[in-house]
Each structure stands twice: as C-alpha cells, then as structure tokens.
Image 1 (cartoon, rainbow, N blue to C red):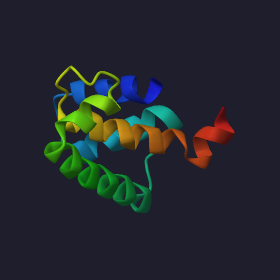
Image 2 (tube, rainbow, N blue to C red):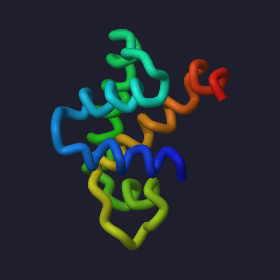
Image 3 (cartoon, rainbow, N blue to C red):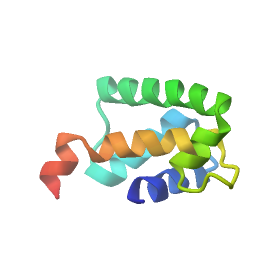
Image 4 (tube, rainbow, N blue to C red):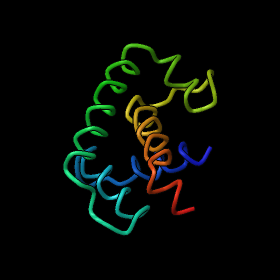
Length: 95
C-alpha cells in the first residue's frame, strides 16, 4: 500500500519526466541526490514495467489493488519502482 501511495504521488507531479519523478522521490526518501547508477537501474525498471503494463491493463489494475478499475500504466510502473526503492539498503537501514 505504501508503494502504491508513493507511486500515485509521483505520478501526480505534472512537471518532469518519469526519471525526474523517480529522482525527486529518492531525494524525499533519503535526503540526498540519487547516484546516476541507481537512477539508471530504476529508470530501466520503470521502462520495462511500463511496457508490460501498457500491454496488460489487467496486470496494471491488479498491481494497484483493484482489478475492476482502469489504472494508468505509468502509475503501476511507478509502484514497482517505489517498491524497489523501499527495498534498498538505505531505506531498510534508515528505518
């Protein structure tokens, strides 16, 4: 649920690309700029899952917890990224 809420907040940000949104969320979580290597990994994860969810709307809705509701593929992909961010050592050790 936390990753879903984080993704919705990222997607609600109208300015910038998905990469910008990921970088801004990382900064909010860790109070530091995301290293380029990590940003590249998360951006790649986003692009792969975005492609998947654009093709499979049911999977996107399921990721967001409601198979009956249409969900933007971007939000579902950002949920996967948010979940990955919350599983980073920085987050686990910080909390």
